[in-house]
Image (cartoon, rainbow, N blue to C red; front, side, top):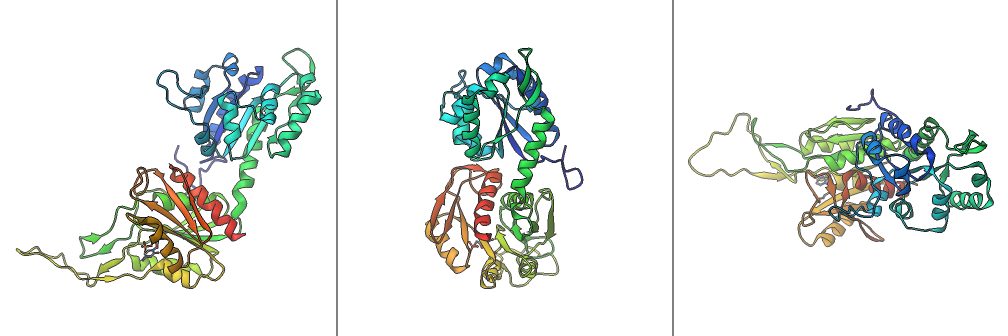
Length: 406
Ligand code: C5P
């Protein structure tokens, strides 16, 4: 179901990696997966080999609508299941149920299955929902492992008291799926609000410069990168004004959208909103030249060639850079040659705090696609990021922007 501001669900757009280990409570992971999906989350599932004895990969694949990951590589075709990519993809790694064995391995850094290697490389918040017999749970070894994990920032959804699979009564039953789902929702909400109270502008998409009532000059920008950034900043609680050229993209939830056509209109909208803002991300592909005269009527073709006189447009980013004060300003550079030198020159010239360089030479980077490969450059140095989705790039840009705003 498409979601907009009115139909927004609590976990819309959130990516949850659900880890399942070999406990009888694994059957509850099916309900948990459904709850997360119904709340709007994109769910991927990684299972330990033993977990497959408790709940089938088919069940979890059907509920999560994604293939299940168990092995380091697919034995059929050798395709590698990258634990690094999984960890990067997730907004939250939820291991439910988490057995005493898996908790012990997590605490000591054992990496003998995909679920564990993913834990070791994950940068997102990690949540565990322990499930085991009461004596195993109470054992000092388990308790110490839980303390170690908690001290490292792992969040624990405490098990509940009640009847256990062994028939005994006590603490060790995995928390009910609705409690776990609510915990994850709350955690992601906390994460989201890191930009609450901030007002940010994002420019996105291509501008359109009219030649006559029919023709125009424009470029290939799809707006996807800028829209992903606007969505990410809004999801983190910022009040976002998205000044956008023409695109076919839906407005990200919670974003105020201002539609413009030409570079001149984008200039007015962005400069007008800048004083009252905490900063701007300049993602738009703005025309550098516009026809010096726009014909009121359709230009008729003749036998010879046609020359259209162009004049420079105003540089919106440079104007904001001159008025910047202590606001944050992020720019983009799309280069085809001598990339880093050109990007560094723009960083200084336009007074950006940092600039996001994409090179058209990199496969998977640039226009239209859903992935991008960028280098973040500031005055202190460069950080080259691997190929990732535009959403992930947006999250990295938002992370860096947050550290500057603080
Ligand atoms: O100089 P160049 O166009 O390569 O600079 C790219 C950066 O400047 C981008 O952040 C782009 O959004 C911004 N820009 C702008 N107004 C212009 C031209 C570029 O805001 N007229």
